[in-house]
Amino acid sequence: MSGQEQKARFEIGMVGLGVMGRNLLLNMADHGFPVAGYDRDPEKVLSLKKEGQSHDVGGFGTVEEFVGSLKRPRAVMMLVPAGAAVDSVIEGLLPFLKQGDLIIDAGNSHFTDTNVRAKNLEAKGLLFLGVGVSGGEEGARHGPSIMPGGHRDAYERVRPILEAASAKVKGEPCVTYMGPGSAGHYVKMVHNGIEYALMQLISETYDIMKRGLGLDERELHEVYRGWNQGELGGYLMEITGDIFTRKDDQTGKPLIDVILGVARQKGTGMWTSESAMDLQVPTPTIDLAVAMRDLSVFAGERKRAHSVYSRPIKTVEGDRTLLKEKLSRGLLAATVIVYAQGMALLAVASKTYGYDLRLEDVSRIWRGGCIIRAALLEDIMGAFQTDKELPNLLLDPNLAKKIMGHQEDLRFVVETASRLGIPASGFMVSLGYFDAYRSEWSPANLIQAQRDYFGSHTYERIDEKGTFHTQWLKS
Ligand code: NDP
Image (cartoon, rainbow, N blue to C red; front, side, top):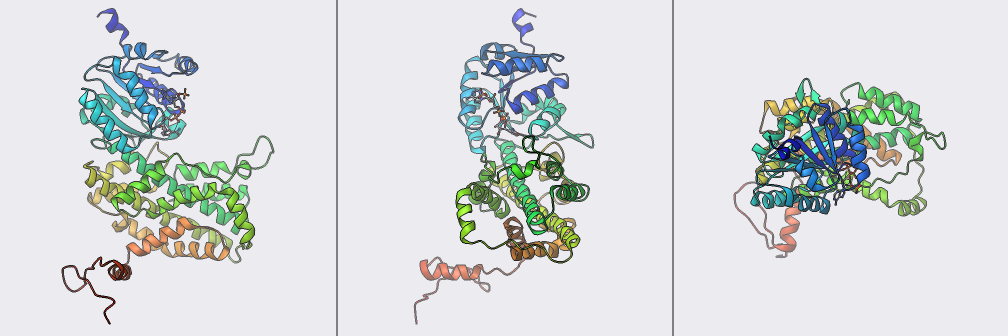
């Protein structure tokens, strides 16, 4: 072996040693893979070397040395912010890469950017994977859910590393090949859209219990902890319970009470909604969750509107324990509805973009490691195991039973919140979607009549094939 070849011994390299990159790389090293890292910030390279000293971890301060340290054909992963940073990292790598080397973008890139990058890099003889990673810092360090898309052979090359680093559920790795092109980034985007909607629903239950029932943080902790032990169990429920136990170091108050109610976004929820609109797939709870984050940002206007429309929030009279139970069952129904919207979007995107997604596999790898992991995903996976072509989870008999059992509770939550004056728009649109989806008759006949009236857009009839137009102004 030449000196050069001896130096080129790391199995995989990581560009971007921030929260996700550093932790994922150390996770791979924990599993026995020799790994190399590069960051433009020398401090980050130093701290990688320090943290990784008990493993085979290399840290490099120049792209040339970094690339030169990797076994050929090389595999370079990057975890940098989406957008221009990804292109600039690729540009920086290109002069040092050779035909057959593989670049993996594991950040939250927009799927259309991934398609362009894959095409450009493949034209240069390089392989490219667009990989979604979920699980935050903790997941990256100890086992995330990983959603790889792109060239199948390229995936096979890094499969052992990704499988080793991923979370495991019942011994199964939370990673599998999603599909060609941008399939991985698309699935990750929809994961995040679902995440937005679930967080919105949980925050609405918090509002109802805090302002409607007057629960304090200790009681809220107990409620969410209890919910986490049942059918609603999942990572988001678990952390929500924990959040109410934390005190603020500065004031000694519950930390939640000193956090400003303004939620910003990095884009993935909005991208999900945009894509759903493009594909004409209804995902109203996800759309609403994005809108509510946007609304929260208008803090000054909300303050003004509060003084204009002040109407005290009413508190719940009657059986408070019953309300909490109804809230939990209503939340379960709304949660199924959210997953139904996200999965229905994936089903259509898969056909439109040729991803050939197996929704059973998507649900399987979401059961562990990722932010939306939840007990319910076992049932969701089961639904797609039974019917691979299921267009909407609401049509699965097992999930339908859950919703049928809980739909009156969902209505009760919506009615109660509306009466109290507490915004529960996530619950409202989820119920609206459900009622519209389960209705054979639709009032869209009136919309068609209006469109034909003012714009001669024509309509179809219930009793005859073809398109029809009426001269509405004729007496
Ligand atoms: P960080 O900000 O912690 O780290 C990003 C790293 O990329 C930093 O080391 C940064 O260096 C480097 N970087 C930024 N711009 C450039 C550039 N133009 N050229 C080279 N390096 C650059 O981000 P995260 O680790 O949190 O996120 C990385 C990716 O992972 C993003 O796409 C994010 O959306 C995604 N992601 C994040 C999750 C999370 O929970 N944090 C979860 C799942 C995905 P410097 O500090 O010098 O700017």
